[in-house]
Length: 95
Image (cartoon, rainbow, N blue to C red; front, side):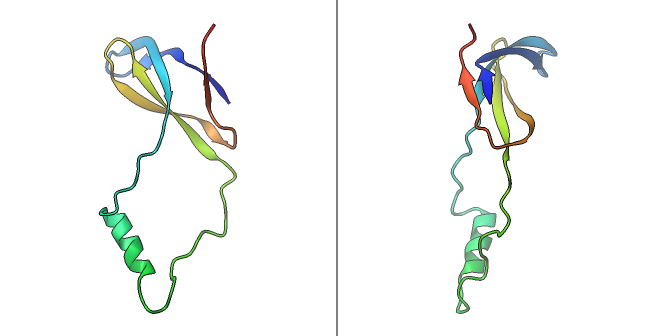
């Protein structure tokens, strides 16, 4: 899926339509000390071997997410692009 690098869209902080810069969303690294990760590690630990396994069902695609940065107020907000898709988002220059 191709996406332009700038778009004119609504900014909730400016409360009007302004030009936004578009960036791809990248998930950060999970902290090993977070509650969810500690719970997961505790579940895997023990004498009975691996208790929690991999999912048997795989998702057909994923929600593509972009970060929009307002050029006026420099605030960032995210937008999910449509439904689940297998296509990877690609940012192209606007001619």
